[in-house]
Length: 478
Image (cartoon, rainbow, N blue to C red):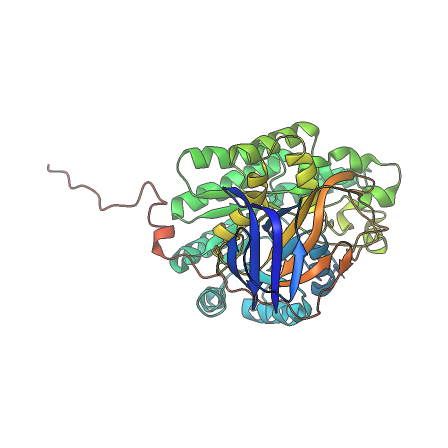
């Protein structure tokens, strides 16, 4: 199979040029102006931008969670991703308490066989014993897993306490792996949930009240300091507030290797959604951490612009209206999660590039290249270079659409961006050198997605992390 993308403006993470891209056997074979090649298929990219396909570093397809299962599976989810210009997702294996993490990993690999696009997995550490340590080693050395997730929230279910964090972080350092955390103080959340419910606040408005910015900021700082002492790199997912951003900024300015992720929805939606008089509508915005006041949005944009937040994601975890109604009388039982994998890139382009907050090159870094580099799959992914996977989006910077559940491809009956008009959209999406989205038509193949190994980083990654390495005490003459 050969494909020529002709006459576009090629946008990379650092440079911009006009030219053609020739793809064959799933790889980029040539990049240049007026390429003299013959291809089975030609895409005219005149007037369009040609960029690396988006990589979403945070999704949850068909996740068993809070007594139900996310409505989006790996096939429907990767198809929806294609429609928005995203060509790869890094999903999460989340073992149940006391479940062997290798068994959980095998289950997720089985579910993901239907994926239309490439994927990989972070693996969550939800408990600890020697088998977990051993399985982390097997996953890192034999299965291409180089990142392990830790939930500091969800007490009584999947929350990792400090002992688990210390053990897992230490093991990750031995393996050259990256630790990721969901930073919310689970003890505080549990106490606040009980207090608020007992006061008679049972609707979705209770959700943000039980998870104020301070519980996120405390957990982010605690995870950072544990990582500092142990000398391990840290990646904090879905930062939603000024407090967690400040913790990341402080650590990075001190020279610590800490990375921050922000969700597209946290940049543009605010906590007023929880006060919608329609319970069903308000419940669809229940996710953790919750949406914040507008002052936090402005802080997050500054974090993106300054480079303190390096990646953008969606935490794509879909629950339909009937599933959200499990918490009709108790906000604590509303399944946490929102959709967005189809809309991330358009929303970021419109509100970022369209407003002057971001340049097109910065957009590429935030939606693709930085994720590929942090999770060690660059330049195979996130690049328009010769030899890279032919995962490409042909982007129409002037194309417009109105986001709606009536027209989206996500398997959910609601869209958190309902009615938002955006400028900038995917005209064509290319995965493994094949056009899988063509101006509104999905041409994806069930099961065509590949599991992507992500090698561990090696000793250079952690060699300079700990500024105060323990040394043998100096002997004092008496």
